[in-house]
Amino acid sequence: MTTIYKLDYESPIGVIEIIGTDKTICSIMFSEEEKKVNLLHAETPLILAECYNQLDEYFKGIRHEFTFSYQFEGTDFQKTVWEALKEIPYGETGSYKDIAVSIGNEKANRAVGNANGKNKLTIIIPCHRVIGSNKKLTGYAGGLWRKEWLLQHEKSFNMGVIK
Image (spheres, rainbow, N blue to C red):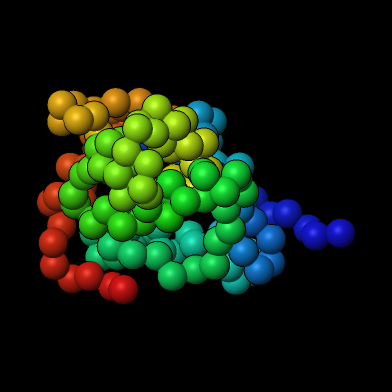
């Protein structure tokens, strides 16, 4: 039986709950809990500590890409969409239609939106970079105010990248 670990990261826009095993990250989601539940400590599995540190670098504006091991859990279509989301460059946006076209299914805008909403690897799989074709912000599981904050944050940093 695989042990599941949980670690909370207190970001500038709320607590982010990191869930994983000792080998991979399974979920990174905003939590509405106001206090930290579990802090980084000596017994934290290395992969969770690495995720925590890379998120910290992201929020400090010095990391634009993530290198720790993570796994998707979803349908083949969802996984295809999530892979396509990773192609949207840091600090830029794309539309649901752009993603649908990039995966070879230009009429799948709604299905892309649905897959986007099921992404459990917030920030790492950058669903916050997807906007409507009219350039307006659309749904985000963490709240539109967080989506707007993340987009502004990324636009404000363009140097000092750690890859």
